[in-house]
Length: 127
Image 1 (cartoon, rainbow, N blue to C red):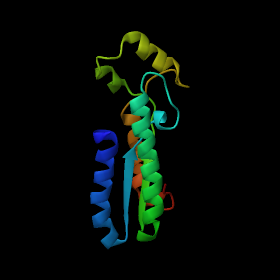
Image 2: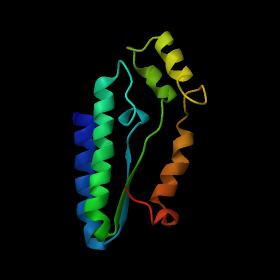
Image 3: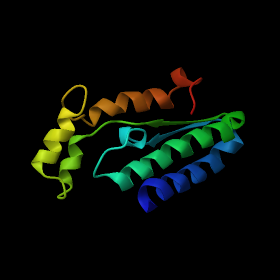
Image 4: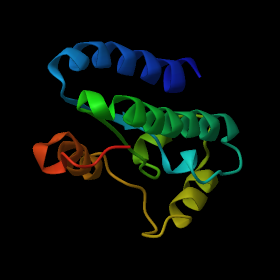
């Protein structure tokens, strides 16, 4: 909760303070697929990412008139999850097999959507 929810909340609060005066700005938070679709064995993670999704939606509503857009990306699993010693190969195989593309994502695959959400080409998308 301290990292996934409080960290995002405090970052947004700090950024918004500066953006309000400019009447513009864009924030992209990191949610996760598990913020909307729960999975067994990762309950706490699902709860925290669900909170990030709701925080994103609420801030988008609260600050639309301030010209501030707030969005989130919600990727599926990435290979970085392997760094956690609590996950064994069977878990990772099941995780990979549960995705539509039958593979884990790569960090470079999320950069494009983030750049788009921060760009003027996305100026009508918030929440």
